[in-house]
Length: 356
Image (cartoon, rainbow, N blue to C red; front, top):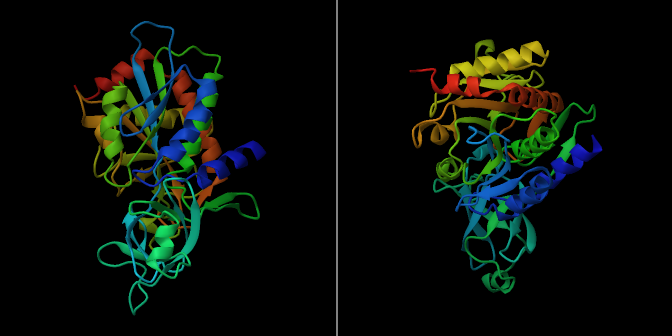
């Protein structure tokens, strides 16, 4: 568990706003390398560890998360030293005011500051998706002297804590980091598996998911999978007043998404993963998603690819204090590893032929 906590802290504290994912990609390359046969990239920066089958012309299975976190770009440096930031990705407006932030220059220098009220009513952002940031500078010249430039990335000040009872983890960026950690653990687990896989397995992360699932478009062409599992986070709605609106319960296992507004997941792999969970006595739950998914591009590019969406519930998603359950993380890894270990060519073929 100590090793896992160190890994979680490492991914949380490594920056990577959409379009600026190089630091987190470098960390992933280091983590993947000892356990895979090859690391591949697309030209936007998406990264995948490849574990090759011994079979010639084997089908290709992809497990893909995204590694970009929501944050800000430096948009304007004001004469008084304050900085206007442009929001990159989805951030809940009511969570912004007073949040601590971290600016990272191109050279890697870090500066810590805070989100100010952008108008007389103390709103956290403007209608143009701008925020006002205070890093303690008193003039524009003072900012420029630190080689801070337009386009530098700003994240929420990173944090990662465990609740007192050890059952939940709180972090500033689980949307974009908890699934990154999952891919590291899954690469390690599958590399150590005694079963020789009948397919080439690719596990990794896209870029720029937060700003229109752009990285998935290029990653789909580079990986050309026969079957794709997309790992993501989903808003936990387990504390809503109306019971009929409740879903995504924390601590009740992996979310099996049966509807998404941008992609309709295939039923056969969904049912197969559900059966794996039931057989192994691992918790899982159905989920109705309201958010776009990388899976849409893997599903519809080239000649089409069957898709499975497997997510973790997150309370306070898209804020600077997001909550996940340790049990969900641990049991999801077990379920996914078992599913991949039992997957064969016949099943992959049946997924592709489901709607013929």
